[in-house]
Length: 375
Image 1 (cartoon, rainbow, N blue to C red):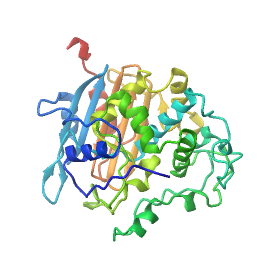
Image 2: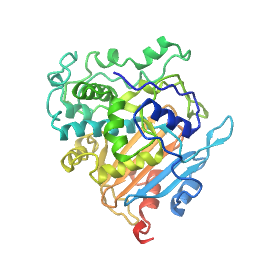
Image 3: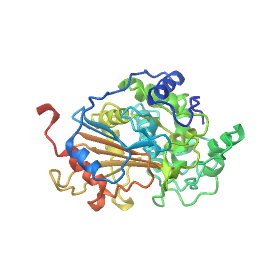
């Protein structure tokens, strides 16, 4: 699997990182998105203020307008460097949502069919290629061996051999399968490593090139891409720097980086039908009650959020790699998108389906406000 080449040290100023992403890929470099006058919602600030020690960035977009974008706490504890709203950060498994969008764009173009076998696109794939479908890969029901334990953390020496070891997913994903195709849900990074290879086989473009051509350029984004290069640390686990990570080792499963505002823009464009067709979006958001309401790369269901929302449609996608935690929420009926990033692995978000916790409090604070059009 090929990715754009980008070397990134452990901590670069956010704007420099964004410019490097654009030098490595055909995207548009932008100045920091919103300066000191970034919009704030008192309710969201109050919720985050009540979360002891929260460190990260929270963004809210409603009816196509950013109504909250704020940074909280310390990004780098050794130097006391605070978080910034224009940081380029690891999207972790939210990357799977980006991969699903790229696949569904090819479905819309007639080049991929969700229920076609993998062999139609990767004839040499060694495991159940005639029985695994694209839909099963997207829904984590392929039965492929589970590579979730690696290759996320590479040896600490940063040598070329270590880097190759970190980015070679094939041995783990072509091991004997863990289940029959379609037998049931089993979360698995291999499904999305394979989907990226399908995309490359069908289009002749690398995964990162497709991100630039089909998402970044149409939406005018300035920070999104998959870095490839030296080991890095950017978060904390149990109060200590996370294990060394090779960003490209996560690829289409968890290797996309970008800013909070760019992630909000992608979520809003998805809700508004500017990335995939209405039919593909309906497929993507069709949560399966038998699999915990898992859909195609996201979870989609109707929790009772009470407050001003009551029972409403919610599409969510979480991500965690090392000490990074990401939470994204879409409330399509309210036209609200929320992106939350923390570089502290100890942050407790709770589960929305339980109706309590920090995530629920953020959802209520973000959605229960006057419409931006009326403010």
